Length: 322
Image (cartoon, rainbow, N blue to C red; front, side, top):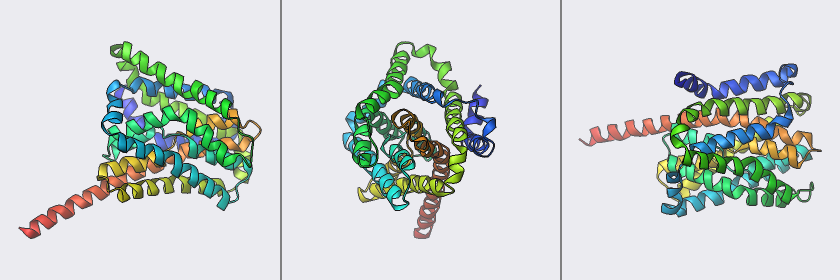
């Protein structure tokens, strides 16, 4: 089981990419995955996230509130504003604009915790930021989405709030409670969670891309360019923020990855339920799901290579001093 989990975890980005390509260029292969499944698949992922949470994961909130507040403010300002700016600069049509902004206003996802771990960043801070931002999402995601889209489309704040509570908060709380009560029985279940998450995310991507393949191909490279820029700029601005605040390198990595990687599955779910008349609104979230797993892995490797280079330089400087 562990070998299977490790194999799937290692090739997650490639698996999602292959399925996305099939769904885009040969949509018939994935049309069996219904868009009505998206909410349930995301609920499954969020339930899994809840199963991995422990009371100790929330200690960082009380021991390092300043870092958590910085991460929260950065999460709900940088990515939404970048989304809005990119949408206007590239003149996105209403559906795509709504989708990109939804990606920007959603909290970070569990993938950011994994990538922070792989990059040797501050995992405790990453988990703390993801948890707090996810709990704030029912209030901040609808409010910020409304502020940025109110002149373009009708945003039902109450409906979006209830949708996030149902799809995200309830499954996470349920998983957290079950883990707290029957923790010794959920250990083996946790081992399979990476597989469940990869399968769920892959099916969400397959559903959205296959049912919108013609529209995606008609938009050309534009939506891909915007999604890649949104994600990459999120990483860059997050890291720059860490530099400005003179954070240790481990925190810079955590902030950068947390800001750049979004819960794009939630964005896709909200697009489907909140903007049913804008079919293209689901597309940016699906593309983001594919891309940020690739870019996150690349960034983790980059962070590690830079750390190795810095370590070598330090050793060389020490030898020259001696």
